Length: 225
Image (cartoon, rainbow, N blue to C red):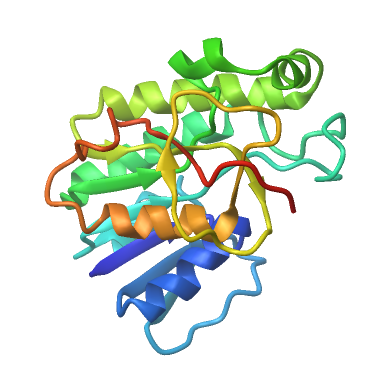
């Protein structure tokens, strides 16, 4: 398939590139001008921002799906109280630009990473996550992800926004599952999120019956890393 990957140099996005090439997909990466990403067989690099409609159209022309891993960043990723490096409306603002471009180029499918506990899954958050959402920029990120999901839901596109549990860099799991609730120790590695996103493209219709909707909460169970 011809795929466009946004956020390709991040934790999940880098795995999408590696796994996408291994599966034989042709990839276009739309990256920031200062990105060190380089072209290689099967990978086309376009540099710029989503606000550049002409560039977005170039990236999306002939594409069969968009995979978005755009997310807010902190100055110190290990510190939840660290200063945010991203605008508070990053994912919702970029969602509007993505939808506009996909409609112009008639790209049918979109997979965009959200997070477990966003939107209608907030009621199932554990106490630890509730504390972080109330006291750190993670709460800002989650509210913006909820707005992102609303934009995709109203877009008319064929979309899915997987909500992974706690992200890690652990080794890939043998099996992934859609879960209704999760504990503080539940996790999923970034490579497995990428795998889930690519496997979603193999489903003939969305949402797949096993997802329970367009915002499935995905996990590999209890883990660390």
